[in-house]
Image (cartoon, rainbow, N blue to C red; front, side):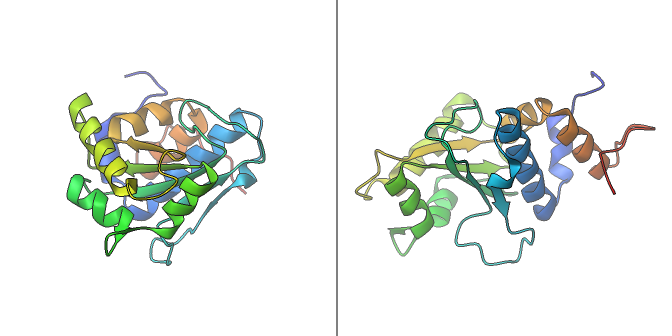
Length: 187
């Protein structure tokens, strides 16, 4: 394994809170890499805080954004440690058969909704099934054609981490795999 690499299965040791922080740090690094302020990323910081279906919210003041990982300047990322089959996706995105208000708003403004599942490591057909479930959840929304939907599994998360060495060093430190003499920037 290369010095700046991570095994995707090592990520399974992350807690819910660390997974959410990891995704937020990746979003910050991603938009900063593309010339935008990381201040455009907000997240609760507490896994127990009520979030109305929003774990991480990216809001970049630009008409268009497509970094390869983030496809819209207004993106919600939902962090899930557990596997997300079709039934779990419907439950996450809908309440009493109605689309979650935050996701409906993303459709209205032409934003993006990305579900990130740490437990899932999808083959192409498995990812298609999850995306189909996400599309089915928004099917009754009048703006369903305006929203960008995506599903990131553990492999995609590891791929994203490898693009940002500072985040990779941070997560390896949290997993007890830090490099001798290497530390992320701190106080």
